[in-house]
Each structure stands twice: as C-alpha cells, then as structure tokens.
Length: 247
Image (cartoon, rainbow, N blue to C red; front, side):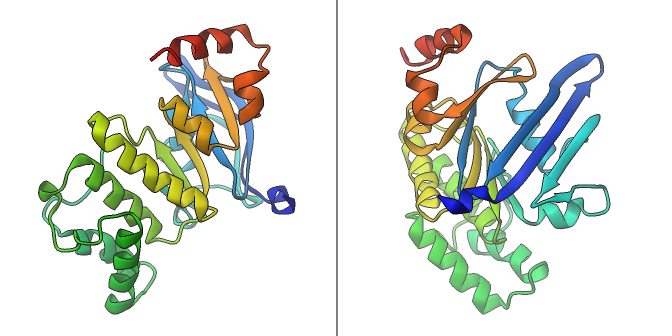
C-alpha cells in the first residue's frame, strides 16, 4: 500500500487542557491516506476532544497539528477545515430547510457549484446511501438514521479529504444504527480517509485498519486492527475489551 506513505493529518505533542484538567497529554499521531482509524476507550479519555482539535473546534494549548505537511494556524484554519468533514452525534441539520437545501447551500456558496451541479451530486449521494427519495423532505419528517445519513451526505458535498465521526450512532435507536454504519462502510469502499470515535466495537473491528485505545488523555495502544484485538499485551486494553465484547 504505497499511498499509505501519504500523511494527511499529523499531531505532534498536542496538549489540551480545560482549566486544570488535561484532556490530551502530549499526544502525537499520524493519519495516512485511505486509513480508517477508530478511537476507543472509556469516557473522558480525550477521544472527542482529539477530533475537535483536529478540526479547529478546540484550540490546543501546545503542540502542532499539520494537514498534508502544512502547519495549521489561526490564519489557515478555515481553509484546512474546508477539507475536513465532521459528523457529530447530533445531526445539526437546519430544521427549516429541506434536505435539498441542507445539502446544496454550502457547495453553491463556498465551492461555487451551480445549483444544477449541486442538486445532481446531492441526489447521487442520497441514492448511494439509500435515501434517494428524501430530497424534498424536512428533517422532522426523517428518522434518526435518515437524518444522520443526510448529515454524512452534507459533509461529502464539500468534497472532503478526510472525514471525522464523533460517535455517529450514539443518539440512534438500535435498529437505525445499522443504516448509519452501512453508510460509513460505503465511504470505506470509496477509499475515504476516516477517523471514527465509536463504541460499536464489532463494527470498528470490521471496518478499521488501525485501532487506538485512549485513556487518561494518552494514546495507550496504537495498533493494526488485527493486533489490537488478538495480540495486545496491554492488560488495561484486555480488560476494556472483555467488558465491551460481552455486550
């Protein structure tokens, strides 16, 4: 996999504090092109903060973040963020707009797409994710799983280089979780670089190329998916997996 030499995101000695609480402690991490990296670990380990720091939603206290070799600063964060899609636990759709408008406003305004181009692309993605008939629906007419798939499409409309997912299924009923995980599987098939925070450990094992175990503001284990589940020497990870895999 020669293109895995291409580092899309690089964190060097990143520290983030909220008051006296250190949430990311001198953390370093490289994400390569086409990698699917899943972050897991107990609550409060820094997983969501790590994603939000990558996307510039949290300001780090020290360290450096690079996007394709370029240091991310206050001056270029907007342009960097335009290459990084993010899907949250909550769907963040505009309730007063149809799916069509939710999906096409930003590409038309920011990417300067024509309305026809944007609508055609939106329809294509909606078809791909199994909700091609929802273009003229409003968010309140959609199930949670459909809303989250629209939120994924909205990120894809901005032609991102990498996608960040912060527990994308945690707000969903169990029967809707599969719909969203299937959508992420489709992105994997498309070769999208992804960093995913999830408690869906079976899904993580199936879709990821790398797994990270975060605890106490540090990356405790960083391993290939196979080694993470079958060869880990880390007792704390073994304990965590034994609890998680029972559910």
